[in-house]
Length: 425
Image 1 (cartoon, rainbow, N blue to C red):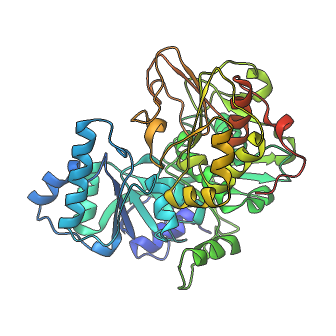
Image 2: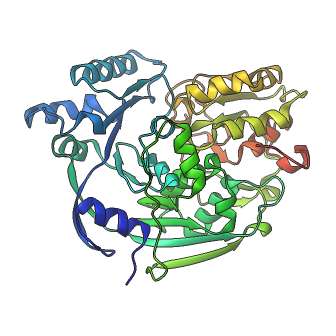
């Protein structure tokens, strides 16, 4: 019997030739990632009581992103503790003020196909877009990983999601993943892998593939995987990864718990409505809903192609006087690239406010949280009650194109009428 990508990666990590869904395996971790909010300041006490020695400094990555820039004294204290801890441990890989951890570890070459990556954040699964088994763990469990480099995992079943065909004009990976989550349900893939495949997935850029893996957890999935190909190789080479890259794929006779098939050519822009990510409807069903704020960015949709699309829509136009538009590039690297290309000029001239890369308003921490009764249209990954501020606010999710179009009209808008026929990303 063949193995899925998840089974192959966990078999390798456990030193076995084969494993199957449901097996409990002890695995060696390739990368242990922590961010400031659920990292050193929570793990340090137990870590020191149990010896306080890292299993391998080269395999531990810390990124300060949730509390940057600090809006409260407590956030500043957390950042200082994280910074001091990383220095005391002499970590070679500590990143601060560079952007959300998921994007940062991808940009710095820590994510490779076939690796096992564990992080103290549920969206660690984003690394699956490059063919890594990546998932979130709690801070207490991370203590054991930091000390031993090992932990146990149950091998997950896999749901195979096949998107064939060509995406229509004005439809993106965000629309693919929202439609998928709607059908699976917000808990329908609990402790399972979602494996994305098909010709439409193969056609996606690396920027777009990361959207799918990032949001796999919104269906409850342990991770979201996409088979690596030449695009992944070229991406990693551009990030300075020169060693041989493992091209891992599921076997033809691998066993899946479900297989879902879609025709990408039939998809239209999708919007997730409050207060669940699976409360998804075509944009036509919610078009006209007035908003107070639009949010373009995050580790889900703040990459350079997302900003380019928004700039194409907003160039020469002004955002509605009734709203505010926040732009948050997914990393400092992307911020600089967007600045070099003149994208930030276009967005600011349209009336947008460009913030520094961080988790910021996406998680309701700082830099643009919403108040009671306010409505936001966001390109981020979650719309739970209270996610971006007040529990009495409302969050809608859509593609960067839908966010940009909504910014112009001050109400949820189908982006297709604002896009030129050929959009180069």
